[in-house]
Image (cartoon, rainbow, N blue to C red; front, top):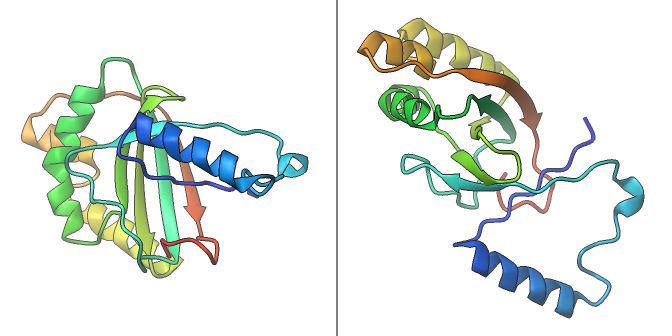
Amino acid sequence: MNQVIHVWPYQDLEERRKIRDTAVKEGAGKWPPNTAEFMVRQRSDIFYPFEFSPELKPGRQGPFFEMRVYTYATGQLENLTRAWKHALPYRLKIGPATAIWYSELGGLNQFVHIWPYKTLDERWATRNKTRETGDWPPSAAAKKAGLPAYHLLHQENKILMPAAFSPLQ
């Protein structure tokens, strides 16, 4: 509740540094905005897209997004990747993904996936339909296919709505 999540795409960390430096220099009091009085906590994470993640593009997908953040046990990224690569084509037959990323800096051993929905009822219907197939969630599909299991330590779900100025709606 009352969280703001910024997603800033960069080609690499050097591009991120250059853009941030320019924004601060040219912003002269405008950037970054003075929001400190409203902040209780702030964190920055750097995520990389999996090879099977859709490209993050501006456009109308939502207006509701479910963001899931999984913390996986150390050493589990390979098993998690194999399971998701196997199961994702089945899930995409039912509905699109917005992003599928893994952490590189910040909170480590994190895996983020974001799904767009027109309504929250559509979210429930999609979730129920995917479970009925037996090919989702990826852990079930991996077990069914004889792939190695992966172990999750923590899961966090958020329902997000874009700000009016967001290029992703």
